[in-house]
Amino acid sequence: MTEWRVDRIGSAARGENPTVLAELRGGYAVIGDVQFLPGYCVLLGKDPKAAALADMPRLERVQFLADVDLLATAVERACRDADPAFRRVNIEILGNADAFVHAHVFPRYDWEPADLVSRAVWTYGVGSWHDPASALGPRHDQLRTSIGAELRTLSDRDEIRIS
Image (cartoon, rainbow, N blue to C red; front, side, top):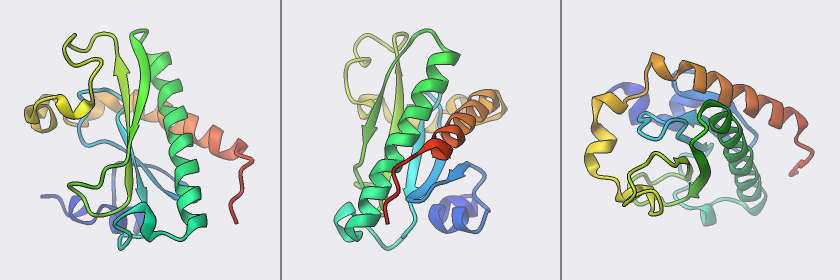
């Protein structure tokens, strides 16, 4: 496994995580390793020891959630521009597999299989998460650039200052 995947937060803080889109006040916005739903992103909390939102001081927790909103809005705008079949975004904070605070932002599309489009992303088969055809790669560069640009615009305009 690539070293940055072993320590996603630490590698983001050190500038070694190639999936980082932007550092926000409450976390690191990254594009997902897999892109079976193009535009899938994650907000990584900054404290690798915080296993749950409740482990964070309230102000940090609120800032993290505010930044989840920024990332979700950026994904929505970029994906809507890129694909007319874009439907919406789903936001999930789970922590079942990775014991650090993070939030998933999944774009959803009309072209998804009928039996999955209205269900949680986790109902997709395990193969979707490991299929080399879905791996993040150069074909995602334009969408990645668009999400990053939207995120920077939104972040620059953000009037919410948690302090």
